[in-house]
Amino acid sequence: MNVSRLFKRFSPKRPLAILSFALLGSALSSASWAQSISLPNTILPEDQARAQQEQVNDTPRADWRSGTYGPVSAPMQNPDALPPFGANLFTGGFRGAMGDGLNSDYQVKPGDQVTVRAWGAFEFDRVLPVDAQGNIFIPGSGPLNIEGQNSQQVDNSVRRAITSVYPDNVEVYTNLQGVQPVAVFVTGYVDSPGRYAGTPNDSLLYFLDQAGGIDQDLGSYRQIRVMRNERSVATVDLYDFLINGTIARPQFQDGDTIVVEERGPAIAVGGDVHREHRYELLGNQLSGAELVNLARLKSGVSHVLLRGNRESGPIAQYFPIDMFYGQTIRSGDEVMFSADQRSETIVVEVEGSYYGPSRYALPRNARLSELLDAIAVPERMTAVESISLQRESVKEQQQQSMEDSLRRLETTYLSAPSSTNEEAQVRAQEAELIQNFVERARELEPSGRMVVAYDGRISDIRLQDGDVITIPEISDSMLISGEVLVPQAAVYRPGMNVIDYIESAGGFTQRADEDHILIVRQNGAVENARKVNLRPGDEILVMPAAPTHNLQLAATLTQILYQVAVATRVAVDL
Image (tube, rainbow, N blue to C red; front, side, top):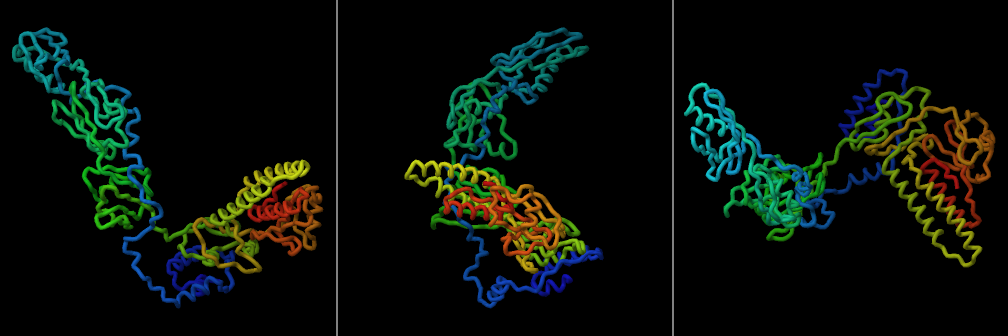
């Protein structure tokens, strides 16, 4: 069946699907030896329901696209309950090594030492201390003030002083020999206020780390002052360092004080961010664009939920990310970023006997028929009537159903009381049996397989992202497994029945339940062997018998064994 007829029948309003499958169909049309997979003209109940819904007035009673409504699934987050942005900054990394202060920007102060060497017409080689007035004394030239100069300026000053006295044939070399250590007070909202030693050129972070870092509950990361002689010489905002790597570098003097102010107003930021944090405000508000610059968002964030309190009362607004930039966030607000933009494309995988790629990117409303009509398969080699589909959501449901059944089994039979010693012994044996069975059953993983082909027809279901469609190859074999002496694969022979194949595999084991034999079809269907005719590619699965005389327990175990076999295609040995 060609692509145009398929889409005329199923979906006249899907231009995206038509385009994608038309292109795919043209790419595969060159395989003249291939046949296409088509579905019968079947209208499913859900198609009828959709047709009926089209006659209903579905005009919305409110414009939900206004951006002021959205998912409010949890209580509002208190900013105080979150760690502050920058909480991992002070973990001992800055206190490891004290700086030596010897860099090109260092400014000389009293107590430093300068090496001065001169040769030629004037011979001189000494280490000169910088006195309390900021001078060094050069013989023949007198005192020279170098306080506040950097190393290059000191070299120029010394050179000029010497050459002014000895203008000819004199070479001069200077070197800043060392710096005077300083002691700096660290106080305010830090973990361990105190007086800490360092060098004038050490970073403010070095002294803060010495004091144990900023108090995460009360301290400010944005208001840190450096005080000297009762006046502020620098104000540091650590957010600049956390975001951009820039930080003020005041040169410390002995007796300076670093004061960490009390934390300012804050907001809570969560959702699709790499780390949920409390962000401190410099004022009482900031813009959405400023917050986006601070927060580290995950890829794909499309919407923002803003909750808070205003003079008019509580608010909860839901914005697309581009509209959020111009919003005003106030103290105490909660901002939740979310990747809430649904993809219009799904990716499904095909396995088995077919031509073409193994993965397909399809429209979100694509159906199985549309994909199958676009796939070419080897002629007379493919069992198109046995197509099946594996789906992650079905796998999760099977896993949950198995877990619920096993939990009920444990609850019912492991906690039942015994009235006599003999009954207690029997129950102890049954408890061990149940426990071993439950442990083995929980190790099995459901297949998530859906039966979509039945009685020569294929259900035209809507595909989901991650689906795996299996197109099996025609098989000439039969698999005999479960409670048989020699599990094996045998060649399919018309006329042989189930017992014939089991006898060819050595017959039943002692643990076999001869009344419960399953046939697992290629399409994933599991049926009772008494009610079906064998086909090539079938698997004969002999179930184990429940080894207990408790009829109720035996029935429960048999039921769970069936459930596990259907979900995993494995007969769990009791």
